[in-house]
Image: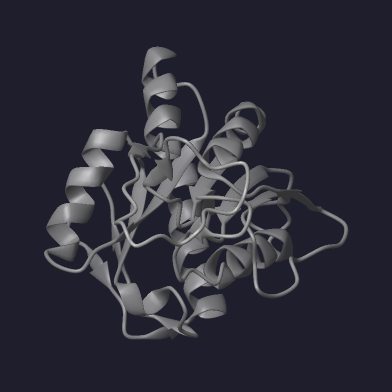
Length: 220
């Protein structure tokens, strides 16, 4: 019960950005990593808030887990920021879409012989905003854990994200994680070498990530 009495917010799943009422831009995330983290945090005694994008399976439910369903990146931002103010730990495991359509169509976009040209706008970075707010409060706020899914230079890119976003820990992983049952990860902190793991099931990975969170909480 190492997290007993603590409040842990976890984001999970993909987000969807609609082109029209039928089609949307998304990614291959299954949300399984965030769900495993929610279940493990609850098993350790935490009160869990799970801000979840659309999942192919059932979201975890039961005493101690509050689920907030969302669809878009902006919805996830709007629900995560106020909830994070009341939490001790925030883990951003969601695969939040980087882009959204500037002008989603109110009705189905019909096929034409001409190319379809659309404008994509950048979505906000939720964890970076939480890091910015924590710095503005002189470091007061929840412990922040992120994920860095990279196709190359995984560890160095993860370190860069950790510094830019003001995180305490980042989980470096690759694209096979999105829809796979296992994750090959490395835990990267602000100091010291990255801690690499062999391929793990996502429940086992959740235990290792939350062990690292325990250690970070012990030195705050």
